[in-house]
Length: 305
Image (cartoon, rainbow, N blue to C red; front, side):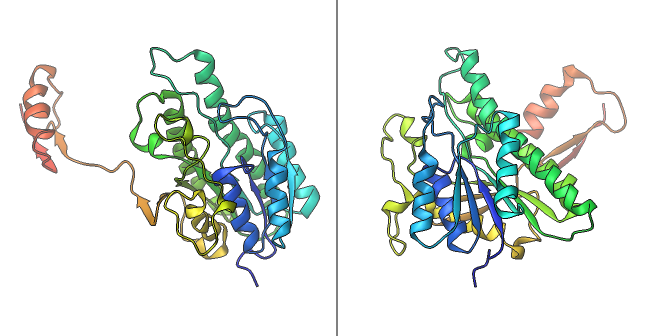
């Protein structure tokens, strides 16, 4: 018996790298998987049958999977993707939004089209898939069905801390965190949780960065072999988040880096100053904020003019 037996999962951007690893891991534990991938390059150019390779790998290992070649940035095609899962397997239980591209440049060199396309794939693509999945799940809940469903979105270190040359990508990945936290609030009453993961690995996307040209596909690494840059290192976390056992985790950001799983705490209140119920005087803020708050890190200071 697998921990995901009976569940139906969609994994977007699953033709290569991290997405392929997620799809294979979910299938390993019994999920039936819709493998979505437009089949384009890391920059989002072109299309192709990349999803077929992942499907073949899953079937060769005894799993059940079908391919989908839709563009998740197209709202109607995202809807068709969810419909494919329901039409093929009768339901949808797990949505893993992994599809993404990069078009890096410093902001003074970045073309507006490169901004728009990255936002389209990451943010609109994630939102559209979540929208159609939520419609499906809300319909089941209104019909009286009780179930557990999961959304697992993908952020990155760039989205959490920023990265030079990635104003588009970092903004998109940060937006996905806000989307995830809001989905966690909106969908929890019907049994759906939403969390975001920040995985790592030597992928086509990281290979676009200077000095990082290595690409590792998860099926190139033996199951019992440890490889720190294996894109599959975070996939067991995805499988657990997809399971019923993760019900207590909702609206969280979790990074999977090398051999570590890291629970991120995000924006937390730090040091505080208060005016003592009086209007602030901008001319005095240098002494209050610059000299006292940001340099000392004192947790609470109360100022009276």
